Image (cartoon, rainbow, N blue to C red; front, side, top):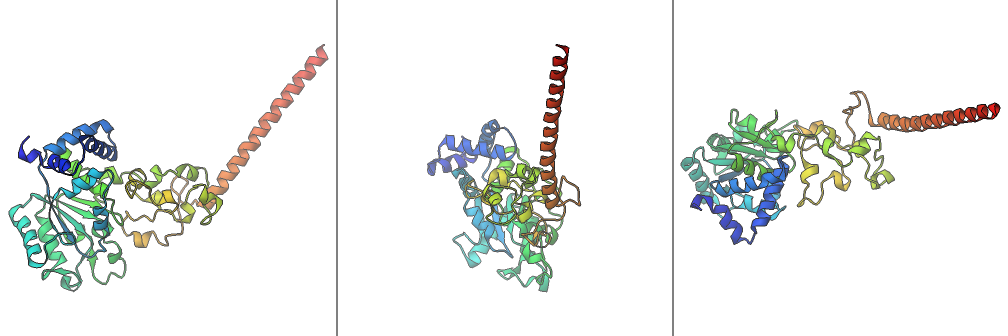
Length: 367
């Protein structure tokens, strides 16, 4: 195997990860892409043959939540390895170098590998006061982003702040915070991975997709990869059947809550939020917010801090039941439907009995 083809295999062996575990991880990636798990073998071959990608990670106006998520990729273990074994030449939070040495590492990648590295941006980019609200090494976040992202093969805006501006850009937005797309317009191959924080498995999947198919994944109108954001949370939710049946949690801890009924009335924004949380899960696939009894807050959507609040009140329109419908009406309709079904069933049984009685009567008269 050529040197460029062995970087991942060597790293897997060094960390004690078996070939079977690696292929299993590739099967999980295939599932995230909505492909048959048998495609995992092709993904494994492609990753092994690909050159080790170079990545630089920029942190601007953020809480480092996406970095925390990135550091905890762990289902399966290989997800952590795929991320760890990227040539991460710059990430100010986790790199050993600091100060001038750290900035020299970033400058080296930008100058020596133009068009040959991936830029990951975490956090919004403040533009107010000539960028004074966020400066690194004497340069503003806006200046750094334009230079680094402008020369990257692709830019991944990770987290809602980078993708859409997030909380820093909420009104009145005193720092002039912008998303990557707005601060650095015209970027080629910009991919948004919104959420608060973004799921590290989706980041791994974006990288794996590129290594496998030598192109970036298809995206929606918000530049989000369709494999992760192509369906509403509502469509994949395990509580969807309760929604359709008009069975809703009315109060925290009530019987409906304990039975796992729909959380729409408690503020769940799943019907208007697009992300793969129900399929991928969090904390090594252990669970996800709705699964453990908390409504989705819509954190993968633009301006969710403004549009989805108050978080614990349900949205006005109910998709699938008309724009003027409410969950309360749905519950009434569902109850009425059940009552009507029982009533109709009773009438049918009553009719059958009457027909049977009449037939018996006629039979007795003939004899």
